[in-house]
Image: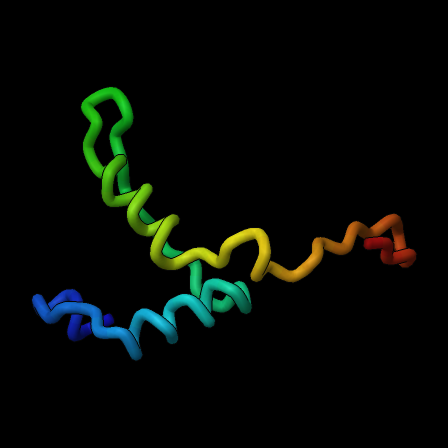
Length: 71
């Protein structure tokens, strides 16, 4: 992250790590936007496409009803 904020490009290895962090819910990106002025919307959509797992790759959601877990 420090390298990116310092102006370096994100390489393939870093991108893979970011994707794994997102998939494991250990990394939560924050993107500031202003929909009325259309600021940051393009960047948000690019982030979603590049760094979030597709529904096919995502773990199935488990609902909880008290102590009972269902799929």
